[in-house]
Length: 118
Length: 111
Image (cartoon, rainbow over all chains, first blue to last red):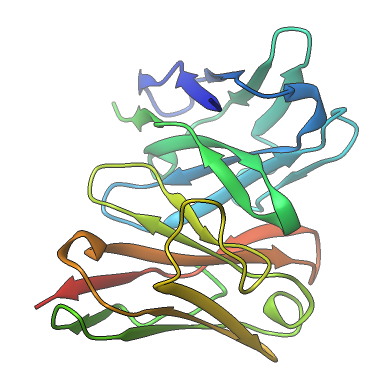
């Protein structure tokens, strides 16, 4: 069974940093591209970042470019999102999602809440 | 702001049909596959449709997808109370830099 479990969310002050993790199991993690997607309270889905299976290709949404860094450790079956210079508008539930067929996100974690507030 | 536009809400009685539109442009829907996601209250999104019209294993054929030009449509027939959820379209956009994009979301209400 495919499982994605996010962790690392919490309350952080504006300008602070946080590192999210996503532990993958039930599939060959090193063979799959991965994404981070977020959802602000009461709002829609917003794509955040993408990383290829080897980590050699990375994309970011303009809203986080230069502040967030996506990475992965295939030996540990883990995906990460380093978030720096956090802003109030970064407050959201952050989901990791596996890239499925034809650029879809076929499996999602349960999400981890990040709250940026003083 | 999302570059894919969906109606905020649609509604119908149980057993009826609803359709949800997703409007984009040549840089996203026009040149990429569209996926559809269902998000039940308080849960993570779930893939309903990929590659415009294909259903993952376990998704009933009451759900269907189509694409024409720069627009896509999700159809739900035989509406059930359990279908009350938010629905999002998604695709890839390659206008300036490659990035994923989602629709604005549509709330389906079963009357």
